[in-house]
Image (cartoon, helix red, strand yellow):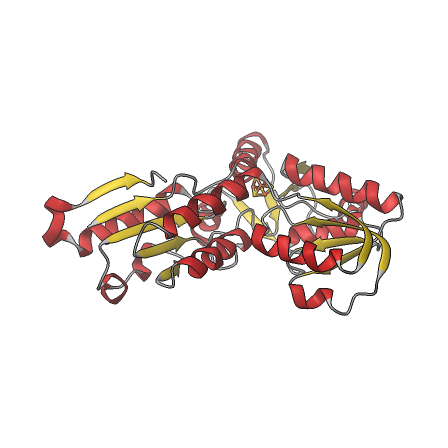
Length: 292
Ligand code: SF4
């Protein structure tokens, strides 16, 4: 039995940065410290933060004297205004890459472009970007949603930073049919691209693959879909204890990967669980990095 961990997996730069900012803020500030929404889409990390006194909130009432951390996904200009109006101190941990996409959307909206944003309408990053688009943004989640769009002379299209490149490509192709001049901005971030590439390479060289991460994490879901397309024997688990003997029944070469919000410990716990299930074969077991 071999266990292979994807070359690029786990916490991305933006999420690590937001976690460090949150912990530093907790050390420096004496009052309550909140995050506006879950700082990262991972239940274990959220509960660790709670123990450190960093709580997640969803409404801005009764926050006198508190500090609110803006998570890596960013927020819309309306929420910035509301926080300022309520005199709430903020610490902005928006990922600099997301900030760059927000500025791009702002510029395009000033140029009076129709902006197609390829992403999940419920995702906080997309809600923020729509706010920056001054009502010029249209969210497209799949190819079918391009069909009802009218023909246009000009349009711009960009993607949620964690979008699946394959889906983005398909939507861009469909938009080309409907637009005379289409400006394409590939705003999928480098961390997302490397995680998607490593996971698809890994899916081609193992017989069983576990994607570890929060079910509400957009980028982890994308990794699962990418791997499942290549390797039907792909399982999406939130924690190691979801790995069953049934899942490992025919496994000889097992891959593990995690999204931008999956802490390294979660992947290590899955390794331990798999090793325990195969303990009778322990002499032959090998943990390696995918070489492809
Ligand atoms: S996935 Fe990319 S854009 Fe999103 S937080 Fe991580 S580094 Fe930033």
